[in-house]
Image (cartoon, rainbow, N blue to C red; front, side):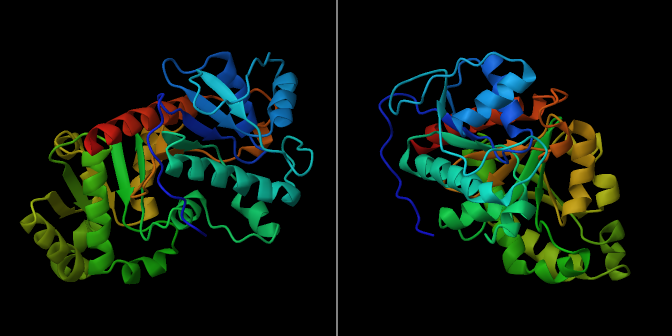
Length: 337
């Protein structure tokens, strides 16, 4: 993919852009509900097929007054319409619309790169049906990294006062130790540290780092990754001025006595850190991609095909994702001045 050029800052405050995601899932429902009570003081552009959002609003019994997006003109909430390839039915996946889902993502990301949009909020997509259509796709994070020419990104979830980043993401557990190289761990910590400063306004971020093994290896008796990989990396980065605590045993790390003085936690693998965060904040958490040249947040849930068109959904995660993306975009702009 060709990286879109960075553009000049717009003359009016650039809006966020929200992609509705999988048309058979709850993303269109969330957009129709959002129109009823738009977020205050946050300009927002919904990127989706107009007919799709209108049909879902009718199914939910909701009115839909949503003007067309006009670039460069400030509006609280508007719609940038891209056409579906085939009619969408709630709960029924159709590979014919996979290219539409990716086209929405591409249009949104390229708009962010040009400065047309301040940041990107993504609704949930269904990786399986995109691959079924013959389009290689492993997820939003990887797609956006390739589109923007970003060699390495970091996944972080935030909610309930916690920020948990991951050293590795969607890997089989048996592959995690080999993936934790000194180079990859140092790069992840640098991206996390830089993002906490630029996007969250933390002058001196303090990061807790989990060990890989039970009891953080127990002095080498339960594994040597802490001794051979994690500790040397932390020592080197501390010499650069980073405030890093660890490696700490993951089973006792998430306690107030540690968290109260910390700005983020780095877990070594997906299910080491995220169960705690999702227990504390599911339905109100946010997925954040760190390291991109654009701000990107996402809901913390999937397409929920069984709930599409039923009205039995909550907007909590979407609203938090929008609010956080707006704060991050403003903070990033200040840090670049």
